Image (cartoon, rainbow, N blue to C red; front, side, top):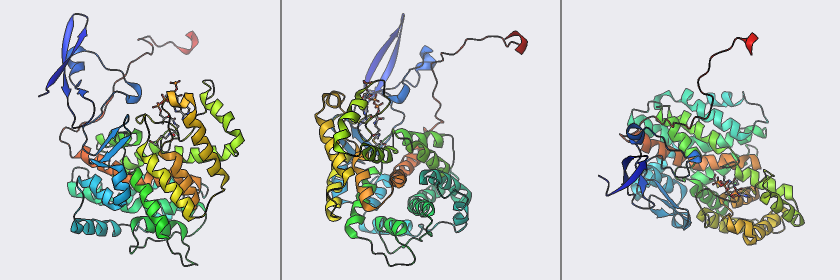
Length: 429
Ligand code: CMC
């Protein structure tokens, strides 16, 4: 029973809308019965005022610039935790005990290899395919390789699918990279931690010994942690919508990856670095700032702005510190891309247009700088985001499937097309 009731008046009729109270954040009007009672829909393209589900996983306060996973602030998790612990937290709701952590790590590491037949599947792709294109295809194809974890009504199969996805996505992302540069696939090493293993699969070659730099592995792990979940964003909502029809988990995560690829979402990290390179030198920044403000120019400053954060992106703050550490570690000082990035950040933060519209650098602005310094090509930036976000998608999907109230997602529309008319024979048109 709702504590508060909102009243909606349409002509002479009045309707009661129960007001639902979250544990944190703004109240939510329950409009589930509105169409049945009042014969009206609500209109909210882009879902700027719509809560699409109940969730206990992630909370964002866009005005305060806060992000919590299961109640824990992202800054604390980035400083004190590590990615696999964060995965456990997102999936099961609580931080693990020592024993639970060890069991979880064992389960994930035992699933890092992919079906050997998948190597042949990879070879069907063109060498120059974008790794995101390969990732969408191969993750979707996991449903063809792992039939025994596709029954969404079986909690055990859901659990196995979750572990398989978290364990295998790094292997598949690294394979997509190796394939694109013509190098042999590198098998996972289960004696390495999650982030080190990913770096090993991306950067080692059979001909040479490769030692993972622990400081770079820590930076990689932090990138994974900062991207692990982000409430009901476009790709997560895509996963939930796909899953609401009962589609198998691999198909749902492939749908999320496809959505993430867009430059307004996860594709922004690649687009941002490409933009910085295109700007090239500090003296050209004003030209690009002017283009970003020009309404008739579709250009936007990539890596700036966010639908929810209107103060700052807390992930960007941590990522910026991490970027400074990594560049320091690698002795990178006079990189021209970095100079452009630093100057662009400064100019945009002082510019009234960006201040008034509350446009701040987001997580993608700094992550590209770190990833480039680590040696990743820009085409791998979004696959790394997808890898990190897989746990968030899986946790949200599991939460939805386990919810007895779950029903197929089916939005309605404001129809503005033709009214009914009769077909004309071609001679009469
Ligand atoms: N450069 C210039 N102007 C901008 C930018 C930008 N990056 N972002 C927003 N604006 C303007 C926009 O033109 C609009 O102006 P007006 O009010 O005059 O029409 C105003 O700011 C509000 O923007 P909006 O497009 O209505 O905001 P939105 O919530 O629909 O879009 C966004 C959010 C992230 C898609 C958008 O800011 C954007 O395209 N940014 C660049 C791409 C990017 O960095 N995306 C990564 C987001 S963070 C990681 C993730 O979640 O994947």
